[in-house]
Image (spheres, one colour):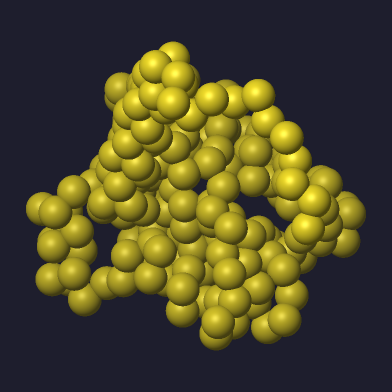
Length: 183
């Protein structure tokens, strides 16, 4: 195999400083991703489990074909904002019955799965990806609707979700919603 030459000196103090800075940034990303995976936190996860319900990622795992990957999209949405990292919505691409699908699942452990400006942006981006790639859409819904304190920010833009559904339908792309609880 051919060895590619490099001018990088891994013994240089500048390299070591840059490496440490990058590792610190990666650790920050890992910490934020862990927050997204934790949903609304231990208290709300436990409450959800006491009610005999599955978490959003567990629902997705059961929906997917066995031993197939799930490419989660935008897991750090809302990072740096006043909203929970992950934006109370899990989105991604996975295989269902041998077909690649765009999957969304509300996370009811985060403010009852209610939509906020970031979850709206995340859902709209997922719809764009589904339309561009002709991916059938499966929505696993357990949501309290709009997050009332944020309603003024999402009420009018939220209409874009319905526009997207009509565009997907007009393009012949299947959409299905599975509704859990009182949604």
